[in-house]
Length: 258
Ligand SMILES: [Zn+2]
Image (cartoon, rainbow, N blue to C red; front, side, top):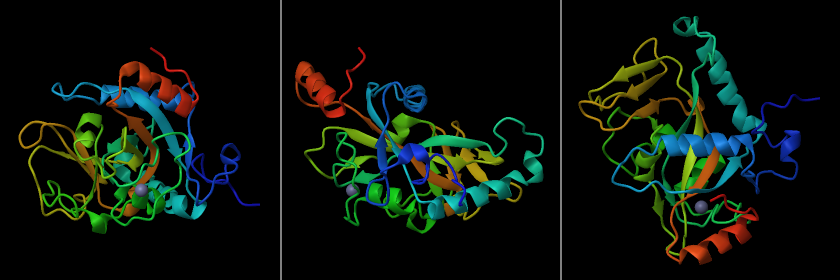
């Protein structure tokens, strides 16, 4: 009998019926995970010039054990680091962080749109399918503040700047929430564009607001330091409010809290 690696695995009893072609599980708004993501999203919305959007839905992203195993292996390696010896709570400093990217399909637009598309320009589906790839860093944004790494942030309004809906009929915005092994971060305020790995003894680079940066960002340099975990669906719709509410209620089959 094989061991179930974690709750994000297809093999977890909660995820029956899910698999390679169906990776997104819609969370009920009463699910504690929904509340955690909604809370983080709301707390992380820091741009005062952008009105805070409502979270419409949260999907959990499920993967195969073979996709999750390297992440667990990496986390175990980080745990053995002397720098983290004295951490008792959340010893690998694992965090849930936001990432905004291109979406050229309508994944997540409603509870039934849970199948990944095959468009190579749809970075969202590529990341959900294969997780992040450090080699693709900078394909969208040439400027890399902390070098060649995978960029995430606790600031949802910053990740929002990087989202792009390629399908004009999209009614919502979406962001990825990933599990990130931050380990012992190297905190810095100045840019360092030549980095390809964290400085010795560290596992990530955390850019702190101040000199070169307005909002926090966290960079990891190893593909196995990160796995997509949730998809947050949020934002405004152009229709009138009452029509909007009725539609969402139908789509997600859950009444909206007001
Ligand atoms: Zn897609």
